[in-house]
Length: 469
Length: 99
Image (tube, rainbow over all chains, first blue to last red; front, side):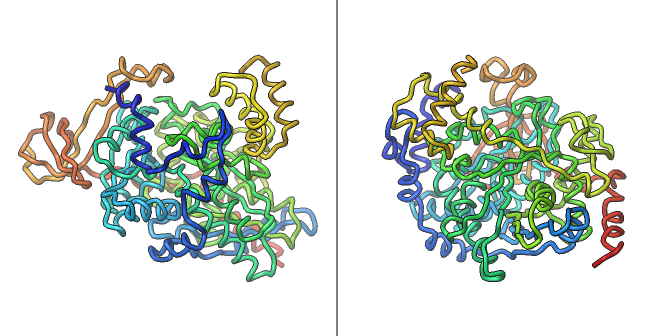
C-alpha cells in the first residue's frame, strides 16, 4: 500500500496543488524559477488585497529601545545598531504563517476545492486552519507529535490544540518522514488542496512581510533598513522576505539564523524529544538551503541560497535567555521562533554602527507548551541537563542547555555560505546521478546559489575530488 | 464506556516496523508509525475496541478507541531557576549609569 501511494506521488500532488510544474522545466537540474514565481501565483498588489481582506499583515514594527540600550552598553563606542521587531504575532492565528496560508487558501477556494491539507508541526497548521475557517473550507493538519512512548513535544501539542480550536482535524503521528505518505493518502482520499509550504503561493504570501518592513522603516526614518534577520527553517521565510524587500527597492542585507541542533538526527525517535526547538533550527536550515527540491512538491519555491547574504547559528540556551529578556525589558512575551533571529540580532547589532537599523522580521504568539518554562521543564524531564553557563561553549544539542547569565554572553556561530553552496553542488550530483552538467544547468546552479559559473566549476571539481559525492 | 456522539481519540498503527522506509535511523525503524485522531464517536464503544468516528473535517475514520474527552496535557511548566535572574539582572544593568 505504501509503495502504491508513493508511486502515484506526482499524479496526486499535481491534482492537489493544480500546478503543472513541467511547464517550467528547462533541462536536468535547470528550471525557470522566475517564470514559475511570476506565472503561478499573484502579484504583490493582489496579495496585499487578499491579505487585507482576512486581517493578515500590516503588523506593527516595534523599536526595542531597552534591548538596544543594553547592547550599546556592551558595544564599542558608536556601535550598537537600533533593533526593531516586526510583531507578526498580531496576525489572526498569531504568526507570519498567516501570510503563507492566506494565498493558498484563497487560491483553493477560488478553484473549487472543498478543503485543504497541510503537513506541518508548526504554526502553519493554525494559520491554515484559521484561513480555512474564514473561507468556509475544511482543513486537515498532519503533525509529527509523539515519540514511540507516546510522549508529545509540548510545543507541537500546543500547535495541535490551536488547529483544533480553529476547527481543523488534526492527525497526530509518531516520528518519521512517512508523514508524507500519510498526507498523500489523505490528499488522494479527500481531493482537498495541498497547502504545501513550498508552492509559489506559500512563498509569495511572505513577500508582503519584506515589503512592509522596507516601507515602514523608509516612511519613518527616510531610509531602508541596513539588515533584516530572518529565522531560517525550510527557507520560505528567508526567500519571501528577501523578495519583498527587493520589490520595495531596498538593498538590505538578508541574514538567516537557525538554532544550532547539529548532531541530532531529525528522523530519530530518540532525538525527537531532546530538542527544545521544533523549527527554525539547523535540522531544516542546512539541508533545505543546500537541496531545496527535497520537499513535497516537484520544485520548491523557497530557495534561500539565492537571497542569503549571511547565515549564523545561535544556541538553544541563548534563545531562552533572549525570550526572557524580550518579556522582561520590552514587555513582549513572544516566541520561540522569532527569538532565534532576535538572539542573533543582539550579537550582530554590536558590529553595526549606532545609526544603522536591524530588523528582526517575526514574532509568534506564545503560551502553554511554547514558553521557555514549558520547554525547559520538559527538557529536564527528558534527561537534558539545564544549567547556567556560556552557551556557545557549553551547549550540546540533546544533552546540555547552558543558559547565559548575562547579555555579554550572547554570541553567534558563523556558518559560511560557501559550505552550504558546496553541499548544494554535492546534493545536485547525488540527486541527478551525474558529475557533468551542461552550461545551461551550470548557469542555473550559479543563479540558484548566488554564485558565478566559475565558482560552480570550482566547487564541482572540489566535490568530485573529495570523492564524497 | 463511551457513548455515540462523545468526543474521543482513536489510535491506529499506520506502518508496522517491517514496512517502514529503509533510510530511517535504527531507533525509528524498530517502532511502528502510529496515528491518533480526534472526533465524535459514531456508535457506543469501549476503550480498546475498534470504533468509527466523524472528524472535524467530516471524514469517517475507524481505529481503536483510546480516550474519551481527550485532555490537552501541555502546560506552562515549572518556574525555571536558570531563567529567573535574567530579568532582574538586565533591569539592574539598564538602571546603572543610564544615559
